[in-house]
Length: 253
Image (tube, rainbow, N blue to C red; front, side):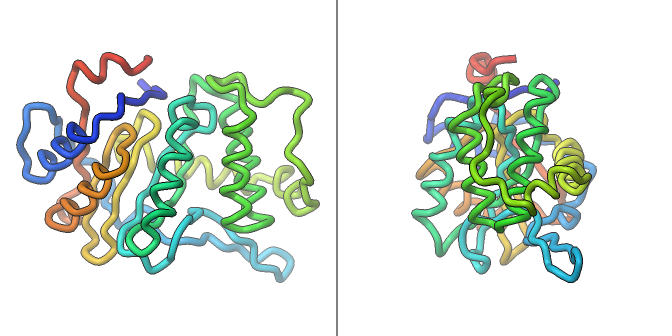
């Protein structure tokens, strides 16, 4: 079952969960091999396309330095209230560690939030296609600021400011649908059914880690440190961390 949920902010618990996942122990965890090898995930931008002789930028959208050792991929839904609360926290943390880590966004519109979630995903994709990474992140922030959330979408009379002809042309095409669908299918293959979720990649070693729920501050740094020391490779596919039953209990279904 897909869900939009978040745990309470418990940095120590998050560190323990990550540590346990890397050493293969811990009663709190369910380690689940996944069907898709990490090499199939689009880690590096951009899926650029030639349109009328012009190069059009595309996903996955990046925030931060392209040479940062670690990449944090966030699977998110633009109608998820927990994603909305976590977005500025994660963005600020990324900006505070520019030499260490970069952020990528992957869409996961949840069925319970449709059709608003996919409509908003199309909007931010097309703003990004017209204006690049900075425009994409600005559009995400605008949607989270204005949406009513939980599938209610943007107010009917509200329109994104100054939509360019290129953005409007993109919105009238199937281009954004293909990217959104591909990222949602990828999430399903990796075992992501709830938002927000984080997929961590050590670009130096190729090792990866999937975390369900938001992880903040020092706990996220600890996760990267532990990933550098352990993690999983293409020969040893994804493992994921599941929260203790007591914590999962306060996630809405």
